Length: 151
Image 1 (cartoon, rainbow, N blue to C red):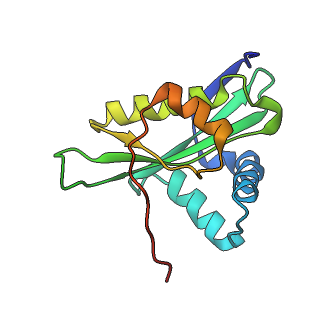
Image 2: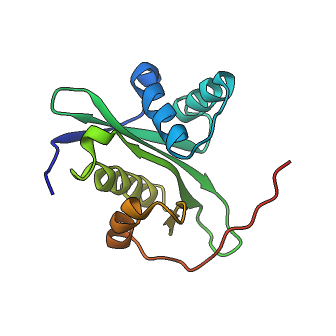
Image 3: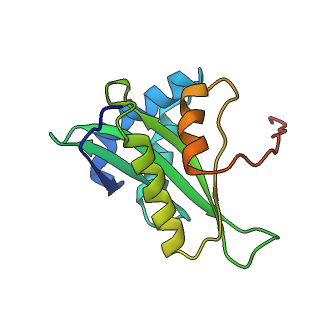
């Protein structure tokens, strides 16, 4: 595995232009589309400071954005503290297998610990075997199956 020199920074309002192509890459990977208005509102929520959510952007040694992750906090009936949901994680294909994904996850872990969260969790698609190899190293598989109803 090659290592990519990377800096992980909190997502800032000025990061929209580098964030957007990575966000679109994430959506494409999961074969979905979200209209531009939702993407813009999502970014504003992630960076506005008024919502219980945020994100990180990974920049390589040359300053190019090579990865993003988003997190959100929510209450739990099982804990006094909020849980932290790592909602999205995407690394540019050119930076994969270089430690960027792990660094982004670790940034979410640090943020969650600083906020007093007892748990960070996330979902991935059952076919995303590449990501699962990393996830198996940094977390434990919960064994839960997700059900949902779209409206």
